[in-house]
Image (cartoon, rainbow, N blue to C red; front, side, top):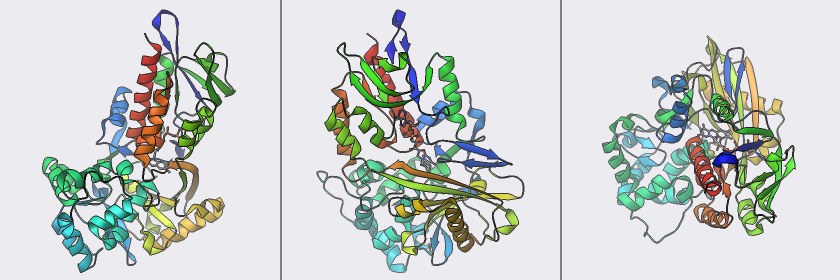
Length: 453
Ligand SMILES: Cc1cc2nc3c(=O)[nH]c(=O)nc-3n(C[C@H](O)[C@H](O)[C@H](O)COP(=O)(O)OP(=O)(O)OC[C@H]3O[C@@H](n4cnc5c(N)ncnc54)[C@H](O)[C@@H]3O)c2cc1C
C-alpha cells in the first residue's frame, strides 16, 4: 500500500495464484458442486454476510436445509443425533441429555451435575479443551460428544487446543454464568430460535448457491474495479530501506510492487515468519511457533439408491475412541441444495488432522479407498462412487495451542513497533471465514491510517 498523488492510496495485492481466495475453491463437474475446503460460514457473525451483501450476492445466500439442521455422532455401531440443545460443549436442555442414547446413565447424570461443578478462579489462565471439558462434563461426555464435535471443527489435538483462543465463548460462560449449563440456558432464553439447533451450530451456517469460491472471486473483481492492482508473485522477504519505506523481495514483483509505505502480510504464519525474519527475528520466531496441521477432504458422489442411510442431517462426526480413520463426513447434498445432480448424493469425508498426520502419506487412490470403505461401514453405501475428488491440505490448519492468546498478544505488540506493518489471516484470532475477514479488515484499516496523513 502506498500513497499516490493527491492523497489517493494505491493498493497492490501480491499472490502466487491467479485464483483469489487462498484455500477457498469450488469445482463444478457434471452437475456436482465440490468445495475444496470450507463449504460454509457462520451466519451469526456479521463479517461474511456483510461482505456478501456489499458485493450484491445476497440472492446467492443459502442456509442449511431445514431437514438437515442437526448433527450425528457415531456411537456403538450406529449414527446417533447430538442431544437436543447440546452446543459443542454446552448442555442447553436437560431433556436432551436425559434421553440421549449417546451417554450411559452415569454419564448423563454427570453432565447434568455440570452446573454444580465449581468454577475456576478468575486469575487462572488458559486450559486445554480436553482438560476443561472433562473437568466440567466428565470423561464420558468428552470422549463421546465434545471430542468428535471439536475435531470436526479444529482437527486439533484436544490436549493442546486452547480454550481461551478456540472457544472463548464457552470459556467465558464458566467465568460469567458459573457453568456451561447456566450460560447456555441464559443464551437460549435470549435467543429462543437457536434452541432448535443442536450440535456444532449447523443451523447457523450459510453458503453461496454457486459455491464458496464466488465470494473471493467477486470480491477481487470489485477491488480491481476500485483500482486495486493484482500482481502474480511470491514474496520472500520484507525490510525497510533508509527512507523508511518497505522493500519487498521475491519472484514476479514489478517495481511498483517492490516498494510500499504500508504492508499487510496475509499469508500463513509460517510463511510470514520467513518473510519477516530480516526485519525482526524475535517476531519471526514467535510466528514460526504457531504449529499447523494437515487435513484431507475426499468428496464422493453416489447414486441415491446406493446409500442405505437416510442422510437426514448435515453430517456425522466420529469419536476418536471408535478407532476409525475418518474424522467426520458431511452430507453435502442434504446440507445445501444444488450440490449433486438429480438422483445423486454428495458426501465429504474428512481425514487426517493433528492426531493422524500419517494419512497425508497415502496416495490419492488409497485415500479414496479408505474413504469409500469408511462410508460403506458407517452409512451403508454400496459399490463404487460415480465421482471422486481428493483435496489435500498439508499445512492449512493453524493450531491454537494453550497459550495462543498470549503468543498472539506478543506478536501484535512486536508488529505495532514497526510502523506500516500488519498481519492478517487464520493464524491469529480465529480460523473461521468471518474471523479471517475481520482480521484482514482490521489490518487493512491500520495500513490505510499509516499511509494517510
Ligand atoms: C479443509 C478445510 C475446511 C474448512 N472449512 C471451513 C468452514 O466450513 N467454514 C469456515 O468458516 N472455515 C473453514 N475453514 C477455515 C477457513 O477456510 C480458513 O481458515 C481461511 O479460509 C484461511 O484464510 P487465510 O487467508 O488466513 O489463509 P489462506 O487461505 O491459506 O490464504 C493465504 C494466502 O497467502 C498466499 N501466500 C502464501 N505464501 C505467499 C507468499 N510467499 N507471497 C505472497 N502470498 C503468499 C496464498 O497463496 C494464499 O492466497 C476450513 C479450512 C480447511 C483447510
